[in-house]
Structures are given as structure tokens and as C-alpha cells.
Length: 130
Image (cartoon, rainbow, N blue to C red; front, side, top):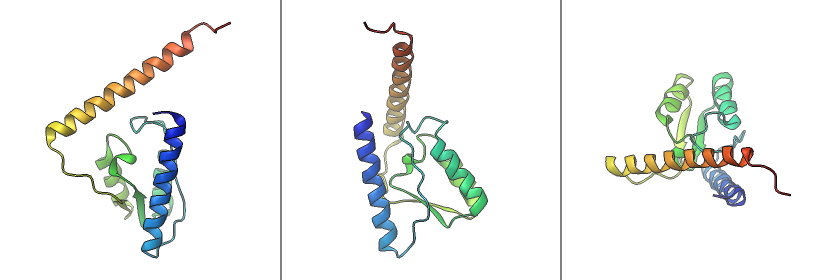
């Protein structure tokens, strides 16, 4: 997905969360965002979010879909947040998928991630165009 499309999708997700919060009469205190892949463990927004949970114990973390937090490890994130009495809420519930479908989606995400990483490495090594 292009950077422009990612930014547009991120803006759309932020608007959905704002509407969700307003409809419940809650106040959105902070936003944490990343444009990186959900498989990237070096996302600054996620690191700041987890630090915020540990220091301020917010009532809830709200995301559009569960896999927006991370592609893998969402159960670990939820368990971490539970330690600090913080709920993790997803606005949209994903349809129940079969185990086979989940596995195929995970495999596609892995291949896509590694292909992108390989492409970026090759681009860095390529000689500059004159």
C-alpha cells in the first residue's frame, strides 16, 4: 500500500475512533499512531502506548480492528493492559474466520512483509541513477 493510501486509511481510522468516543460521551486523551506494518516491532507509537498504559493506567485503548495494534501478539498486548486495568476495545468485530483462513491470512502477511523488506534492502544497495 502506498504511503498516501496509508495516511488516508490512518485518518479514516482516527475519525472512526473519535466518533466512537463521542457517541459514548468519553474524552479522547491521547492518540498513538504508526504508519508501519503491524509486524514491525520497532513502531514508536506502540512503544509510547505501552509506556502510557504502565504509567497512567488509562481506562481503555481503542482501535478500529484488533489487528491494528499488531499483526501478531495481540493477546500479549491485551494481557499486558489487563495488568494495569486497561481495556482494549475494537470498534469493529471481525467475522469469525476458520483456522485455515486465519493461517492463510497470516502467511500472506508474512510473505508481504518479507518481500517489502527485501525490496527496501535491494533499493538501498542499488547504484544511484545518473
